[in-house]
Image (cartoon, rainbow, N blue to C red; front, side, top):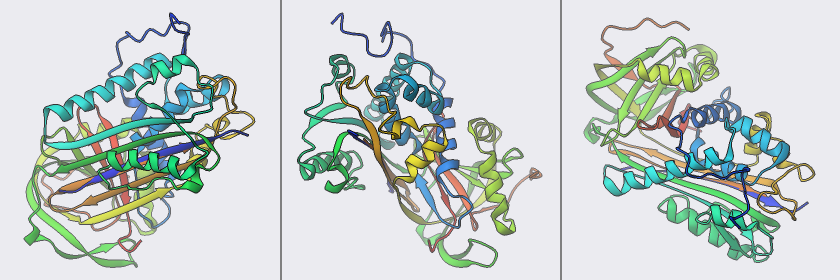
Length: 409
């Protein structure tokens, strides 16, 4: 069995009927939306922006973790800060967004209670300094997420945050922040996610043997290649210019989808695929798959990723700029008195893929071509750069995604 974990963190620094927090009428009884395409579009847009796909490097992160951390910031925003976050997150209403957020949270919790096919843990926390004047309605609405701590004791504050992260990710990400990260913090918005699943059709360890992986036509190395033959859903996306293969996990509620572009000198096949990738093209590729007998050859790999303030830079390029400017940030829905802004970002992620399955974890902190369709492909060989996503098939939500390009990186 393998694991996947992710963490996201936003750090903020300084530079009753209950009051309505999010709208003139906080009607939380409204029906949540079944359309999660905005989350997918945000995640894929962020991937294209934060991942230097022209470089020969690996990358792994959880767009869903970052979406959760940024959505926490959205709940506390106002004015132009709120407008920028709405455009980036593809949302337009705090009450509807909160309802969808709670609905997803409840659904994942219930699925864990009712099955043991896989493990998916997700948790959000908004840590505020105990001296802040929080609006009572925020304490009411975000009662599960909000926690007051003393940031004047940075070591203890960091320990509290890291305990939350470690517990959620089953110890795969034991440390998200250090004491130095939260010395001047007034608020930390954190999300942690963890996934563990076994393949529905496991690879036999006896079949794993060294094989060549080509990072470029001139740069290649030997890696442990897992192999198996079976009936898998496979497709060819002319929109993306790539073959796509589904490797389902036990229970089939979650799958890994591998996008394998043609191997073109200069990495152009991979880059063109990423440029064309969005929620619509990905879903079209998934919908247009068929079951076929195929030999799957896939590297056995483990990736650990940390994204620091590059996350803030990527979000700024996506139009979220006020949030990171102490003079312009508007987070008055949280605290109408203290000027809060995001001054640091941290995202850590981990994934291990082996014969048994996948384990992944991540956490985020925001601190104040045309391809002919083959009739019967004989081989799906991932011996050159490919993209992979851990996909919730029931909600069509991308939980984790990454690029495997260089075994030596």
